[in-house]
Image (cartoon, rainbow, N blue to C red):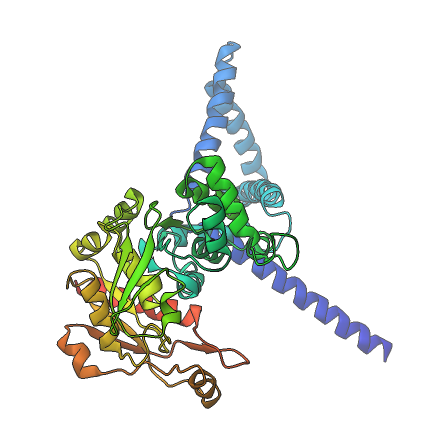
Length: 456
């Protein structure tokens, strides 16, 4: 019984050893992948070492080439007397390759230990992922609210060349309080986007999103909002504050405010009322017929316009139609820059209607509202719509809030000249809250981009 147990244990150990050896060989072959700029520098280093030795020999008045040739001649003659060339040649080559492999293994192992001390991921895998992400398309995403940050979590696994252009019209909650007390631009939506694009810095991200539950004047504020407010005071404006915060969080891509102007939204309702303030518009409960801002035509951030002009792909949404998406298009230059591009452009329609903003709206109604807000210019070629209805549990939950699935009126959308992209991109939590699934949404968007890009 004990002998059988020992045999099984020995077999398991041998199997694990072979598995580790196979894994290590696979990892080493990855270092030969093209584009990593590793092999060329190793060869240059070896050449430099040889030239240095040769130069030193010449400097001390030796005849290095003659001596090396004589040494090699004597060495090869001695070996040939013992072993035939078809045996000695391969043995010498093998010995040389083993020395090179051993030396490089130790070198790379030492580098890996310093750069990845936790050992969670192989250094070569990190380099390959870095290369893939930074070769990804230049994606510009325009919006605000939780919808935008949710999308960014999925997109960052496909490209590091992401620019999120975020509205700064928020005047409610923590952002609204900081705006009133310090006169800074609202940092809430920008904070969410920074956290979403953070490169696996879990602790820092949790700290950035931490919301105080007690404390005189601190209750309700998030640490990230306070941090961005302080950084704005130190650096001089929100743009520099966001850039500095991005370094702290190791953000993939960049987050930009649409404008640095102190923008305040207003809306005219069908019953003649004029509502001012982003947080007050949904509460008014009327049908919005016109949306605008004070001051009129705020100037766009130059970096935002530059990002749009250089983009390979432009995505609008998802998010609250009148208080997250359209405010960006009211900023002078942004709608013009989008309209003038010839890259693939898509709008992500919300799954559910929003009381006080889009109650009773269809997909075509969403599109017409965006077209009207930017002077009937066509800012996107296609609209992404969720394919299946949410569960009965979610429908009941949202119906109690007078919210329902956005109806897809295919004929009206086609008359507006937009292609329809249907996909299952829904995520429902335990209580029936409906959101876009970040991974599914990003996968569908990149697949459509691939088709549209090659079709142009």
